[in-house]
Image 1: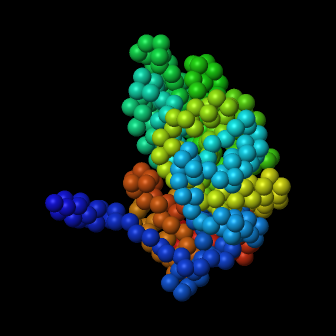
Image 2: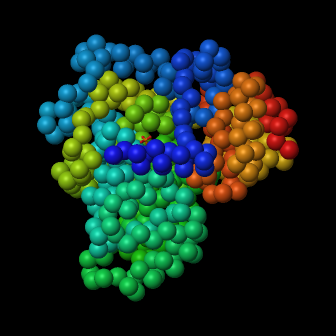
Image 3: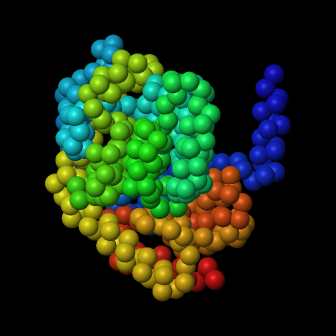
Length: 389
Ligand SMILES: *Cc1c(COP(=O)(O)O)cnc(C)c1O
């Protein structure tokens, strides 16, 4: 009966698309141990090193001691502990918003928000490079899905205009949905233009601040804070799995939005609540982000340092504006070879190839963190210069 899987696997193998893990057995700052050898990692989203922060670990340990590990039930059926409520309050305080709702991951929150608010009679407008979770969620709604060229607001304008002409009845709402920071290119959404169009067409703006939470803005609230547009964004989504070094997705907005999602959102309702200790870690991480702007500064200093050196040496890192730095190679095979060379020299940097990126746009994806030392950054530069020509 399952023979078809074997056939599919053969096709994947032929295309070089069988995926497997690299398994880490120990971690120390920016170094990871793999098969008994230590590597400098340039692929974590833990931008501030908070997954290893002593205060975060201590909070999680205390919660485990007090409560145990699992939450035992879904949020609405007895799985809500004070830790979940405290984390939601902390998220609302951190984001300076009325209220917040916690989901088990960033993927789940995107499914949960979008499939609950958007109906098949509505229209969605997505940037072509939006995260897979936003694309999947949009498809599940069965709404008309309009994809605009990456960061191309005049294309978005045109699509919004067309949708107005063809809208089926008064019911049609328009949702503009975008990543704040695009996860493969490290560039940012043209949010000022997007909110202008939102107003012009009476659309609702949803922004996914996954890679910008804890990273961008004076208080680390994300791209909308950085651009002073928080009031114009209707719905903000984030995750604790990146710069907060933990786990859990969240949505912030007004009280009605949160009450509605809590009562209606299936990916919120029909799943077990996060372990209380994970919430304790998230609370501590957000507090550290709020109180320690110097961590963010370190991240940006490291990023500026490596980018300046890369630029001097003529590397193409596209429109990257953040610590996600794509090193464009082009050919998939060559990219793999480069990645292997770096690996042999103690650097853990994944090769990103089709279908994750378009054919001819294979690249190394480097993420810089606050933990990297100048020595490690110089080592990266030395080996890159030796192999990429
Ligand atoms: C990583 C990411 C997610 C998924 O978040 P998880 O907490 O890892 O599930 C969602 N949206 C964007 C834009 C992301 O980069």
